[in-house]
Length: 119
Length: 113
Image (cartoon, rainbow over all chains, first blue to last red; front, side):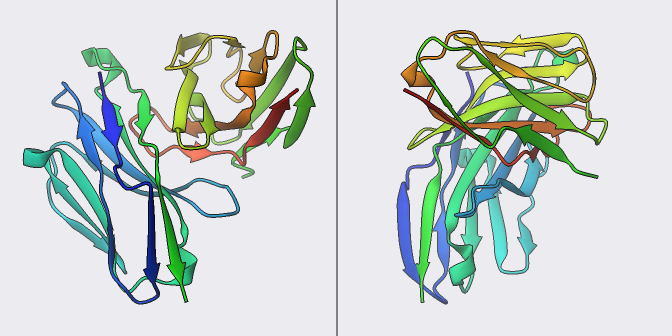
């Protein structure tokens, strides 16, 4: 069964520090997708990134970067030069396989990491 | 586009009462799903649907029913509310398969006393 582990429950940093949020996943499928979502204090869920299992290239988007390593089943998220507005709960999620290929397409979330960026 | 809408935003129920949480999307998405969010538990999938007339169970389906008669709507029914169902409920939709980015509604905060 698919599983996502975010071992860091809470992280607190000072503004401008770099911070990495860890995500480790488990799956038996060779086709799967990994996601990161952000939930700011206002409560809505915001999509950040999707990465499929066949693309191990790291991705950078402004101050955000993602490191996908199949060898360690990890999909870590780094915020460079953190800002107070980055304070939120961040969720890593995994979706397995295509339905027509026996997959479930169910999205399973980790328990989230609460990031607090202090001024 | 309004995106994914959910009503009501807040609800208080007494144990044993039933109610329906409404979810609608105007993006013509085939895939819709319901999650509940509890402190320290992340989001857990309750039920999902890959198209009109097709639904399936997620991780925590007990005590909830769903139906999908149209592409736009995916209501979640609580049959007999229990305090353990106190939670924040999110509806989501995505284009095509569940493997795509999901668009989430604003959530419904439900309290069962």
